[in-house]
Length: 470
Image 1: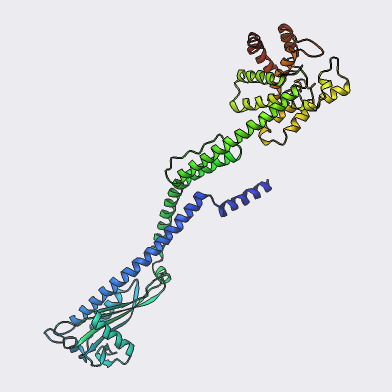
Image 2 (image 1 turned 120 degrees about the vertical axis):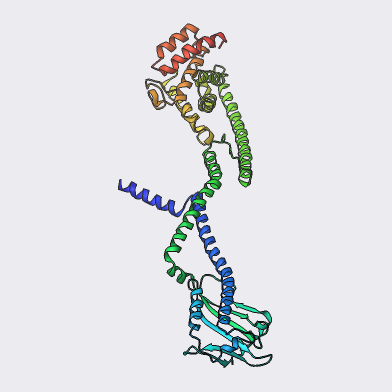
């Protein structure tokens, strides 16, 4: 019991690590769905970043201008050297805008008095007073000059894979009537996917589980839809590999699977034709050999063909299926092929056989079985050839089998073989008449013959055989 449990456990593990086609497709769809979810997050993040940062820059510009006194002229410069407590509110607004996905690391305003003049930075000191200072960074100066021509600059990584990175947004916010040129600069830290997950763990887990469930269900549905015809073809192929070449691949698919089914059907049809031709050639060769065996003695000429005819009629009376009936006919044709090893003097001897001669004659079932032993297609008929001289009561040869231990087809051949032997002349006696044959069968039923088969033969066949002159 423990060994069975261990074997079952190991088989389960192997099934898990080597899943079926449908399960593999389900796993593939699930992974694909999660990958699509991740790529969707990346794409939306990249698109949303550009639009959101630009939008936030516009809001910051409006907040700055809202702090300037009313009236015309260059109003942003009027903030310089002025203390404004509401600047902290503006900064808080800026930080709140980027609360979930970003953090605001820099918020700068740059001004240039005129073309060619030095750039200065407008910043807020610790007393909330707007001050200016010169910009000495040549790289920053170049970017500020470029912004005046392009109006906006957004610098971010070309490809975002969910890692934390920095985004820089510059916008020319100079308005008509301003005597100075102004550039607003925002520097934003975009959160990485790990940080974002930690901040929104429940929402992301819920979304991830929902995405996993939907992907798995869709994967299971589509894999079942796609794999079903393949699994069906596989089962048919297994049956054909086992030797059942009468099977046909059925599918309603009009795609590559349908083409595969048609190709396999064509292949199987060719194999079936080839096998049939080879079987017919082989059977023809064996039949010729059997006829030559029967022809060794004029007493047995045509014996195998008559036995085949009687066995075929008995198969019809027994409502035997086509496959078994075909095997029975082959067994009947070949049942005495082993007599090729029996000398003609024994077959034609008019008197009783000596013990040595009888022992030699009794070897023909084994010899016949050995002749066809290496023919896989005739494996099913070999027992009938080997045991067609066994008796229901166990008194036959070569092994003395008894009752239903004797193969069914061998019991049928016994009846057909004995009937032909009784009605035909033999060197040691004349053929028996109808009444004698009937009496013999009735007397030997349950001894030589299977009672049920003998009853069918007597009731359903004898009168018809005699009417036909057989």
